[in-house]
Amino acid sequence: MQGKFITFEGADGSGKTTQIEKIKKYLEEKGHKCLLTREPGGSKLGNKIREILLHYDGEVDYLSELLLYMADRAQHVKTIILPALKEGMIVLCDRYIDSSVAYQGYARGLDVEQIMELNKIATFGIEPDLTIVFDVETQTAIKRLGETKDRLEQEGIEFHQKLRYGYLELAKKFPQRISVVNSNLTIEEVFSEVKKILKDF
Ligand code: TYD
Figure 1: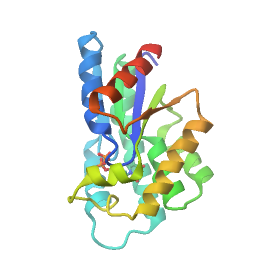
Figure 2: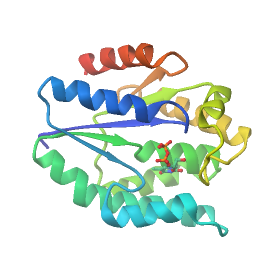
Figure 3: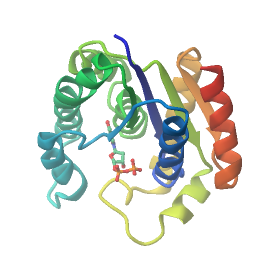
């Protein structure tokens, strides 16, 4: 694979999306060709799945939810991520395998090992070269979310605490791949931490 694959993770309200846009601009100014994509919804089919995942108002079984994320992921890797990596691009992906482990595993309570196995199948074994986790205090994240929340963002405080714990556990398990950034600071302070990580990488 010629390209580089960087993923971004964190709770809703971690400031992740703002940072990713800045990172893309920064890398492009340095002359890199970047593809910015996201999960769920990075592919055409994935966008349909995203609609269900975020806005379906009936009951969603946890396992069904997990498998919908996996279906989105398989389509995304095959049709968007792999072709871009083969072209030598830097693929910047807003959420990937660790979201399933943190949200469906640590926060929802599904089996973490099983989710990791499913991730391997859904990604054809394609792991990120680097993952940045934006770590934010639960209260700050909830405050940043404000009033307009989607299906997952409406979960209670305990869910958010488990989620945060899950991401930090993942970072401990995979220190080579995952870097944690303190996202409680200002946008510029967080970005300067991110730049340090990118430079080392
Ligand atoms: P999105 O609006 O993209 O949130 P954000 O801007 O915070 O990334 O919504 C994605 C939601 O889907 C988010 O709440 C996290 C959740 N999610 C999972 O629960 N599992 C997954 O595997 C993925 C990729 C996302």
